[in-house]
Image (cartoon, rainbow, N blue to C red; front, side, top):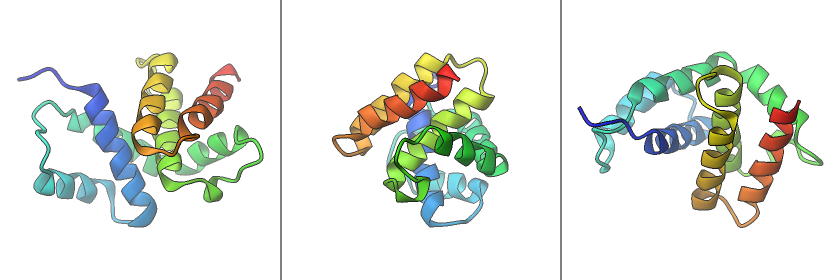
Length: 136
């Protein structure tokens, strides 16, 4: 079995979180739908990790949203671009619940996702929110 690609797994998790902001079906259905319909090579994807993240966000959504909201300066969560919300939810979940992943790794990965999927301000914005979160 190929080594899992955590970056790619994280990216897929973020895409599925983004989708869940629009379409409310359960996380397992989203994962199955992704697996059936993707054009990407997925043998190196850690679907256990993706399921854990999506389940964790579903089960702890209120705590995660309240945590993010605490560190948004002059912003409300519902006013942010949905991709920024998805990245922040994935990263906040990791910071709060995935103790084996160093916070700096989570933040760096979130910034990379913001560069790829967000607008020009997204990387600095995501970095600021997450750095404030880990300082507390």
